[in-house]
Image (cartoon, rainbow, N blue to C red; front, side, top):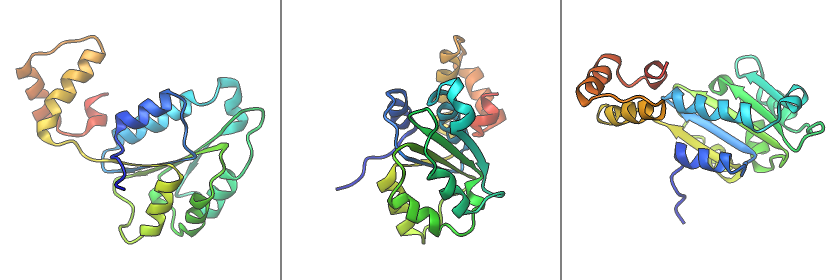
Length: 184
């Protein structure tokens, strides 16, 4: 059976419904959606008073896969969940311990791996399969130029502003498809 495509909207609707998965692997060339999902998890899963003991942010260049797994296997303290966010996950070298963890993740841990500016190595099929079985593998692709004007219009509409089509195209042409820069 083919797996349904994982979109930003589908991930966010599950999160807002508080249907959390133990693993969120966010990868791709468009960092905007990766940041939006990881920021939402960081700000909304735990109550402010629970964050001190139950929310950890690590950087892939500073930790090993074994250290990430050790942190993920901790139990939350006086909370339902522990949130572990790993930024720059593309810098973690030996991913074998993570693959083992993905096969049996802790139900009380929400592990968010942020792998920006690229994809998971295509030769790591067992790794990808383990991620999909454990939770969500979200790939954030660069937006095509023809998709920019509707994105700009919808973004501004959500902010309570309107824009004419000529101005929308001018913005799209001058800034390009870097959504993080476009939405500053």
